[in-house]
Image (cartoon, helix red, strand yellow):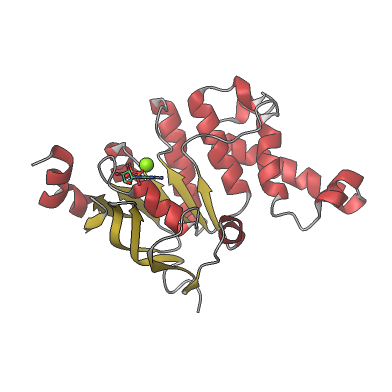
Length: 254
Ligand code: ADP
Ligand code: MG
């Protein structure tokens, strides 16, 4: 029965860069319908772990499982299996409207081909109308309702990040990996992001949230894994992790 076990799991991931061991045997189990935080000081291996999960990097040891089966071996195939990653730097179409940026995400999961989209078949026109409505809803949800027709380039830094998340959601992933999405966001934008992340959990998605903003992590996560020096030093609910002496030591230094 799918949905029982973790939707995304890592077992014993080791990753070395020359003489440096960035990940020294990391386990992670992400369940559907949860927001799973990954915290840790700078250089603790968070982004490297995400790259190994999505096969942007090849781990030296260990396995990645999607729905309990070995993950596909390329980033594109991992994405096709429903694991989507939003990078620290937005990759938006700068001159294209916010709405059309979200629509590009939807076309990635459209049952029509690009050729049909270009030829504008009746079936495509019908789908296009409902997708536009859905895209507008998604933008409103991300706090960008008033910006649908703005070119992405004209948005603030925080709005661009929210738009990037909205576009990733539009691809209908089952696991959404967000690498430090709150960086540079205003308090209002952080609230919009928190709303979006909670809504994704309600819809049964798993969200993996790498974040420096401790207050934000504590607010939205169900489970938090804490890395230090390429190892898991703590895992549990926000309350459990907050009071863990090993976590305090990692953040405050010895
Ligand atoms: P975090 O995301 O937690 O800040 P990273 O995963 O980016 O940490 O980095 C973990 C460690 O691996 C750091 O010591 C970093 O310098 C090193 N590292 C990351 N990527 C590379 C790379 N491509 N080549 C060499 N070292 C790297
Ligand atoms: Mg990082």
